[in-house]
Image (spheres, rainbow, N blue to C red):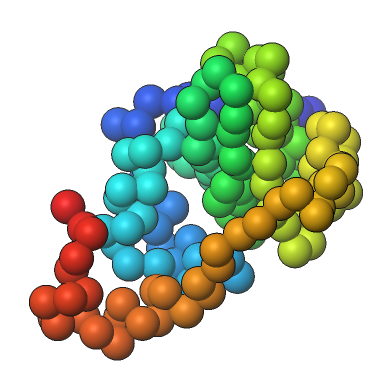
Length: 157
């Protein structure tokens, strides 16, 4: 029997404490994420919650203009709920979302879920030589080390 999944983009419904705990404490990509930055990231994104009987069990967000470009980020299903097809159902829902249709480019980064995303049309970069990035993998750790220092608060609301 398939789980009765519910998908919702209502930011008020998100279990922000659960999402933050997972991203900052369990994910490999956002370890040490400061809470203020987390909150800004959700406020600036199209967020997708997946729920079972009212309990949020998964999350993803799209950073997008909903016209030409989107970047898929922070996709996860809680460990106790994995292996039940929830990530596939979440991806199917996201890819069918009306505001994300006919985009020229949708990107993501993953260390371990290439097989999942390939099922939804994602491929390695067609022209990696055209792509550039500015990457600061130690930003959260640096901010934590400088907590309380006036310069650490610059750029935060």
